[in-house]
Length: 263
Ligand SMILES: [Zn+2]
Image (cartoon, rainbow, N blue to C red; front, side, top):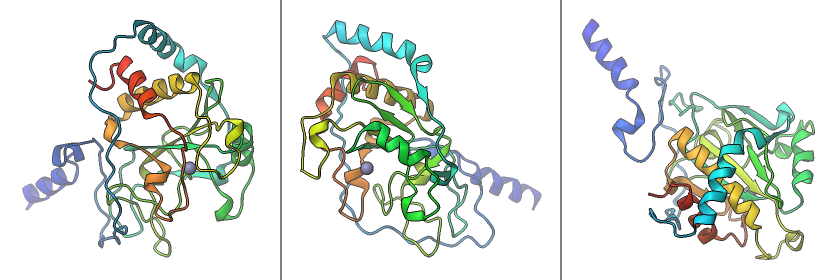
């Protein structure tokens, strides 16, 4: 019996990557009386626009991004946001099932209004659930990267949402979301995008540079594959979100490849 218990405990702690390929995450044991959580509604599968690429001919781009990566940790700006706008990552869902304590998905957004306007909302104490919002990181039009929340915390970046049949239900009264396993990153919208039009003039070259450097850091640190970099538009189950609008996947492709992340 002792051995059987040891064997059971061993199964509970087998890293997820040994059971499913794709991404790695360690899970705690289920709580006693754990029961199945409701599944998200059907949703289109995510097909990443990023493809495998090992060679990059643009040597200036490679040199520029590698230099930026060297300076990333020291150039990262940090802002303290109000605790009403984030939480700990939960270790179990509302039904006692284990959840990954480390992020396994990146969700891209845009701010629509300026970066400072987004930060002002996160810094404010928001007692009403509906007003609570945050991203982990924002990238200004000038390329500045601002960390608003450390990745170990749960940002409130997406409400009713799922990714490839996966969400976490933390309150049995409410539908689930991807927030518990997501990293939320938002690009500052250009001035001509401060509206609800379907597109705008796009993001700056400096923004794509910083985006690639931040993503490369997260992909390495949390073993997140390129297939798990997605958009708010895709994960949103309310069909309300369209961000990030006018996103240039080719610009990101070139830069992630230059950093050796797509090989
Ligand atoms: Zn969004």
